[in-house]
Amino acid sequence: MNKFVIKGGNTLQGEIGIAGAKNAALKVLVAACLTDEKVVIHNVPLIADLFVMIDIMKDLGADVQLEDHTVTIQLKQFAHSSIPLDKAARARTSSMFIGPLLARTGEAIIPNPGGCRLGARPIDRTVEGVGQMGVDITYHSEDGYFHAKTKGLKATSYRFPKSTHTGTETMIISAALAQGTTVLENAAEEPEINDVITLINAMGGNVKRTAPRQITIIGVEKLHGSEFTISPDRIEVATFAIAAVITGGDIFIKDAHKAHIAAFMEKYKATGAGYEIKENGIRFFANGTLRAVDVETGIHPGFLTDWQAPWAILMTQAEGVSTIHETVFENKMGYVADLKRMGAKVKLFNPKVSNPEEVYNYNLEDDQPEYFHAVRITGPKKLHNAVMTTLDIRAGAAIVLAALAAKGTSTIFGIEKLDRGYEGFETRLTKLGASIKRVIEEE
Image 1 (cartoon, rainbow, N blue to C red):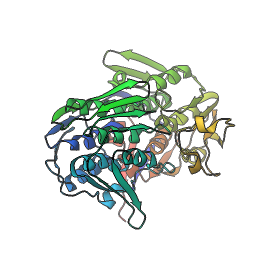
Image 2: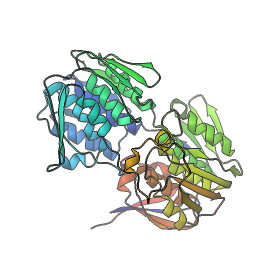
Image 3: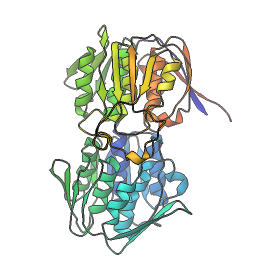
Image 4: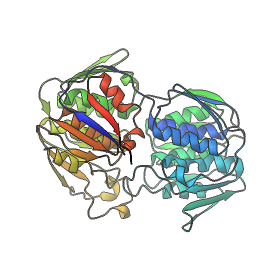
């Protein structure tokens, strides 16, 4: 098991670039499999999940070439219609191959997907939508696979009962080559979805946002090759911005202004932390006393759920009492136990909500009595070192931030999860002045 050993207290300063968005990169790889021609994608983040997806595509018969941060894909013909179970268990986006497989082979055998376990994360919304496109799809509990067949994908009108990022993208990809016009209602609006739309249109598709939370896809007979550049990762922007402030530092983030961070900036400004918007990026820096600011996560254009764990670290250093209310996932507060170990004054609670069906974006039946949906943070509190284990990508980033600001030397196990979402995390932090070392232990 790999671990980070972090000596806290160093001031982070300097300049850093932002990788391509993880939540766009993995999905555009799937979209590239809709054609038998060559697709070139630039600015891909070199993260573990990307390599898993590349392995899956190669297993499906694709020729994939990766050079620096550019990947070239050509899937002339699918070798088979099944996704390997071992690989699918490591990347949730593996389920999205159902679209290209059905469109080009008429059959898809897809395992129940993996990835970080942030509550139930069901794909029932995707299965139901694809099932309305002339697809016979059933789940076989004996092998853990969804088995889907079609004699030809047909357009549909489908309304998602809850907003779903991956479900929206899967339906877009599935409808791109379907016969007729598909209309998706209550579709997700996250900016990473626009990367998928832009690529498909560059390949000869016809996908448009035709109204708020509505996407119309006019199916075409064939898509062709194209070239595309992935947008900057807005989660990374927030992570490094917070790293600057909690260490009393000053970091310039190149291309941060190109990311969709309006909701983050609104709350960040309210804390009194420093920033300077420049032509080619944004400078974030410590600026004296921080003010406590409440946040509630939400679907786009709200405060991103993947910002909330790092935001909690910022709030441990803010003057006053702040609350974070998580509404997107039912079980995403596990990192709070680590903050307690580090001396933070934090308390989990469940807010009184009169209309939970409207407030919470997860399926309410997946909620459990032991889950907490909010945390109250009283600050500022000096953090001290601790031994911790990474629960998921963003919780892992949060405890790394906490360790950077803490007194003493912390150890963080399970950092393989961080590798799924951040490219060269410790290397980039070290260049900014952090004392962080990766230790590989022999089993």
